[in-house]
Amino acid sequence: MRIARSQLDEIVEHAVRDAPNECCGVVLGRDGTATSVHQLENLAASPFRFDIDGRALVPLVFGEDDGDDLVAIYHSHTRSKPFPSQTDVNFAEGWPGVEWLIVGVSKNAEPEVYSYWIEDGKISDARLEVS
Image (cartoon, rainbow, N blue to C red; front, side, top):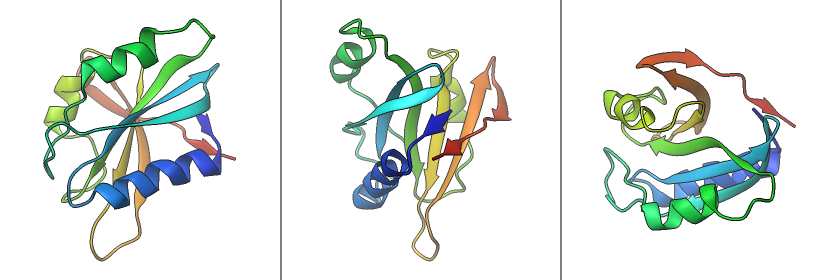
């Protein structure tokens, strides 16, 4: 996915602001390029997992037909490396073809952002191009 530096910065700022709880949100786009970032509330309000309100997600993903698609779901890890957990892998089963951006936020380090594909329970690196 291609994403503007300002959009990626917005995601990282969301992760830092919501710590010590995980944050969550979605990235919409066209042809593999991000067009907008939408911060969502983590209903779990937990440092160990996130829960997205379907009522907030459905209009973004299935609302107006403006040509934008769901290209990524993002969230943060506040107590572990930014690598998909088994909970993330299980959640991804319902969202095939969507990239997973994970922001690692720890007390003693700069935030790290990684992107993954999670398909059929298998995790692979996704290319994240920041412009």
